[in-house]
Amino acid sequence: QKLPESEIQRVFAKYVDETDYATAITQKRVYILDYADLEILQRNPGQIDGGRKQYVTTPIVVLFLQADGILRPIAIQLYQDVGPDNPIYTPNDGNLWLAAKTFAQVADGNHHILITHATRIHYVMEAIIMASRRQLYKSHPLCVLLNPHLRHTLNVNHQHIFLRDRKGRPGRYGELFAGDYDATTQCMANGMTSFDFGASAFPNDIASREVDNPDLFYPYRDDGMLLWNAIQHFTTEYIDVCYQSDGDVAEDCEIQAWAHDIGAQDRGRIPGFPARFASRQELAETIGHVIFLCTAFHSCIHFNQYKYPGFVPNMPHSAYAPPPVGKGAEMDADGLLKLQPAFRAAYSQTWTYFQTNFTVNRIGQYPLRQFDPAARDVIERFRKQLQEIEGRIDQRNSSRPVPYDRMNPRIIPNGVTV
Ligand SMILES: [Fe+2]
Image 1: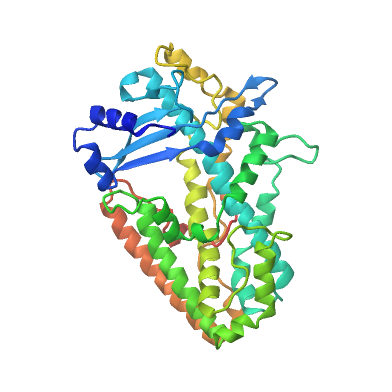
Image 2: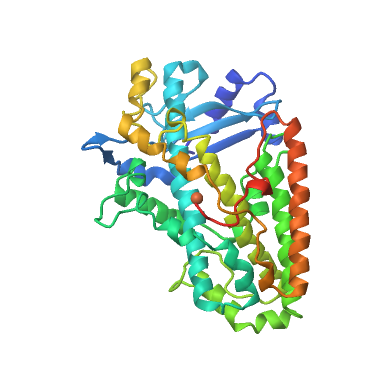
């Protein structure tokens, strides 16, 4: 095991008074974050500004769910392999604990933006957009429905500030991440091959990450479920208007070609995308899943960047000094500062502000003229439901210790527009 359970137990006993380890495990109050996916970045670090070295590790972080619903980190191991140079840092380790937390944040930022955000939303949507443009005639009812959700994304994805620019130079934003250019893009490619469309359905994701403990303060989950259900309900009604029977779906060669274009090995290569649709229910689930991904999910993943890496010292995209080696390492305030980027790189990272301070549309906006009367009624009902959800989330927020608005339809854009 990468982080021996006996060690977790030992740390747990030392830092948690509320309960014992066995009870905490059965109550789902112990969480582990594992950044093994970043090994390629750790092995191939980048540099910036003419030679300043970048650092990232592959931490394992243990979190405990306190009685107040908040997660508290109690242990951080900076690398995967157990060994004397790879101790478990704990809240008792003073500045070394702060350094370990900085490396955990660096890892989380790289994972969040390279894998979750860029790859598993922006680039997944790119395959879906290309398939829609190639296979669905513009008056096909699913093309009419999806179109408002697919706007602006290709433009956003081709901003040269992230990947290479026209002269082949790494983008000013992309180069802030901790690996060299090839490792960074390979890390993203790995994020795509290990992605599974079916597993990314909201309820499946909540279940597989085991974050279903109701005591966990997790508005993303609680509000997200409202949105997921509303969108699924909407697409089910919409599909029932468009198709009279399951046979109609099976015989719709455009929609079958669309699915093939997204998932097939010689096409979009999105793992786990349905190869074909045999029923109205299957089709409705998938369309609802795509709409959730590019609206509610992207809203949370994208706009919350301002709150975390937007304040650079909280989550620099690289560390700029090596991690401490062992518990005897020196780490004074100066050493902690050296982990942070110099001015130019820090300034580039605040580009996040421009990426998160505007929206161009909002979820539920459809050009009604383009829809049949029965479909218009379905859309009107969906809009009413979104309005109800706004009210419910407002109400929840009035009594939450920290308000959470990213799942509020009032501010969710209609697609990956930024
Ligand atoms: Fe985005």
